[in-house]
Image 1 (spheres, chains in turn brown, yellow):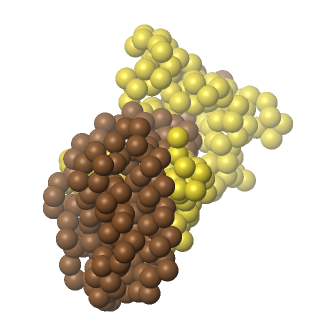
Image 2 (cartoon, chains in turn brown, orange):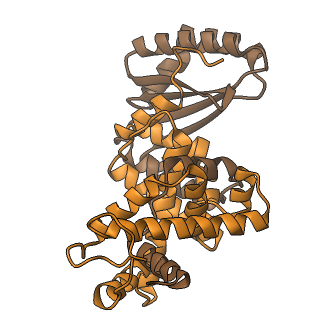
Length: 155
Length: 199
């Protein structure tokens, strides 16, 4: 016959030996309860550089963040989708994808990949680019933010 | 209302699993700071938490992660950071000349422990004990599991568990004790070939 303190001590030892399995559901709850604080600039730069180093030589990866005014999200999405479709036809554009987070419905992110700087310049000089600039202006709540990733540098 | 045609977090996670660099850059942009805050739950200082997340992202750049449930980005990131932090702590312990907690305990269990929960002769592997533990946990209520996940794996702090379950400290202590006792009895009973308790 084993007494309770001994049984609990055995339980603790058994769990220490194999670890305790945690359900995704509990992790998700912990994630939801975690307050976000800003990571250091050094950390941000270190990770951006690491990401830049895996971009194929010469190519450019660009993340563009667009924040819509409340109530204008649909118009911005519509204009951004037209922009993405037009971009994909342009030679030198390797990819263009629009993302939206369910947790933040006013924020859109455009992920664009180019064969190099000349392709980016062509893209920025295209008619569809100018049109998107004009349409987006009254729809935005904040200036557009862009982060470039490329081998050997991050901006 | 998200547009049906605009990819959300699920598409982002799928792209991450395929090794798309833009997906990793976007995950980092959207969630990098929160991943560091989450790692702080397990490691002592902000610098170490940043190391944990930078290493994790570095591993994903070399080998894309396996994404099983693309619909739950919070669960995926939290679980990934949690495991990365636990690995980091283990390596730190080894680097400072201390054995990983688990290995020290297993050595004791394999050599001398002869109690109700200790592995029977035919089940000396960790895997056996692990599957017995999993079966026992399946028989507990979700609330009991939550309390144990906080207690044994530091998945949640006591305050967070109390908040989620809507209970005060006294009830927390009592329910945690009961949950541990239930689990101990289930494990002890699962050990016996006939499924009968020994303790």
